[in-house]
Length: 302
Ligand code: NAI
Image (spheres, rainbow, N blue to C red):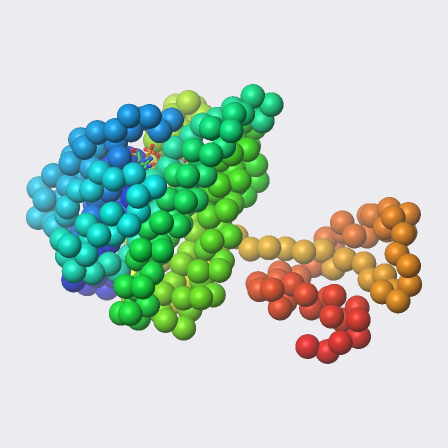
């Protein structure tokens, strides 16, 4: 047993844990001593139907390995019930991995309101519901680790994924503020943008790539971020195929116009190349740093 990153006596909730990535998280946490709530609605990749077999299979696997786990079959749309399972079965909740997800891909032209709403219900509202229910427990015990699952489709966009991309970047927005509000309580929230073989991506990548993109290569980052010893908070990591990197904002040095004078669209257009020039840049990490050049432009010292 690895004692360095032990989760003995910790309770971990993984949503969508019957699937590719979630299953790996659940197995990893259980291997390290955690009691795991294996949540999965057990529907299709498009979010229709339900079945208890996805969650049950992972619980059985954990138990066969000598670990402790219970299944929960609720939709993340009913997140409170999932946290309730953790409290009733194990008396606490220490780690929450918001992982459950579905796709409703369609070009924006053809996208229906239902495609938009369902994706937001599962990804954004789902993470909200679970976090909202787990948050008071985490504040109370002065320890909590939350992982939200973003996506390259949110960070960069992807054809046919306006709904999914918006929801996935919404999760990064949620992460940013939860990190600020949880910081002094030792409740840390981070986001990951994973890439791995699953039913979601099988049609996307060629065979050789799929083979290398093992879902097992994502779990070590998630486990490490959730450790008591980790101080990481409010960050976003891209992870896949055995590579892990951290992402941040980069901003051009920009152009200062005189705020006392009328600013015309023509003046902006004239300086366009300079506005977009990244030769000099900064990497603002919070709202204060974001507004620094504006304050400087007003001659106000912060
Ligand atoms: P997957 O389809 O294998 O797993 C998702 C699991 O979530 C499924 O078992 C499904 O039954 C469950 N689920 C769906 N809706 C649910 C609901 N309402 N309530 C409870 N469970 C529900 O897909 P994969 O690849 O393991 O995805 C995991 C997460 O990672 C998702 O949030 C996905 O959007 C995200 N992701 C995956 C990428 C990849 O390359 N595999 C890329 C970027 C993001």
